[in-house]
Every structure is written in C-alpha cells, then in structure tokens.
Length: 160
Image (cartoon, rainbow, N blue to C red; front, side, top):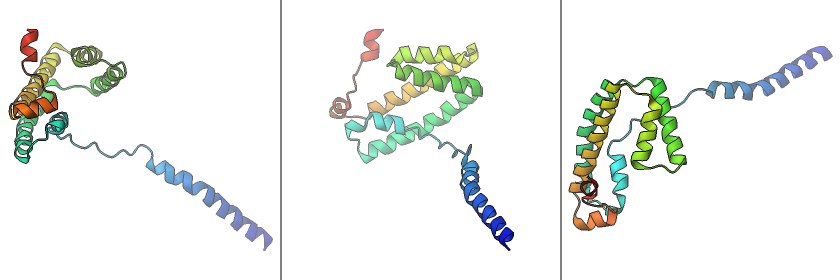
C-alpha cells in the first residue's frame, strides 16, 4: 500500500512540474500573423497636428487605397527575397539607432539590401508613388493646417 501511495505522489509531482513546461512549449514560435499595414496610417500620423476634418481624412484614405494597389503591384514586381526583406528591416533599425534620416537612411538601407538593377528601379518607383501620395494629401490642407503640421512648401524645388 505504501508503494502505491508513493508512486501516485511521485507521478502527481512529475505532472505538476512538467505541466508549466509543456504549456510554455506550445506557445513558442507561434506569432500572430502580421496585420496588413493601413496605407493611410503613416500619412495621417504625420499630419496629426493639422487637425484634419473628417472629409479630409476620408479623401486621404481613398487616395491611400488607390496608391496601395499600385505600390503592391510594383513591390510584387520587385520580388524581394526573405533575406533582402530581413536585411532591409535590420538596416532600417540600425539607421534609426544611428540617428540617420532622409536620404542618408534610405541609401544605407538600399545598400544593405543588395538589390538587382530591376529591383532598385522598382523600389525607386515605390518611393515615387509614396511621395506622390504625400504630395496629394498635403494639397488637401489649408494654409493654416500646413503651418500646424509643419509642412514646408517648395522645399524640394529649392534644392534642385
């Protein structure tokens, strides 16, 4: 009788010790699928200080949706490998940590990705599409909203 009780206690102890380990093991490696990025979110965030009207927000979302379709088609044409995507992510993080912005950050990321000429051209086209979207969104703002958002007009033209 003592041996049966001892055996049962030993098994119960083993189950108590093993159950948290098994529960934790089942959670490892299971990430939630990435949420699709809202194409308008970045622009709306950058123009947050402008206090956009509901009509302006709707128009920006509409423009962003149209642009997102074009961007997706161009990105598919670029056909980035998983290694290139990972390199891009790491380079973006590194550039941010080093305080790089604008062209300097973009150049560092592009260099790290090791793109073919066709991929470089496609990525350039994606950048142009996104810049055009931003330009269209800014065009919807009143002069007061542009001032609040800190949008500088004509900056690119002055650099050329």
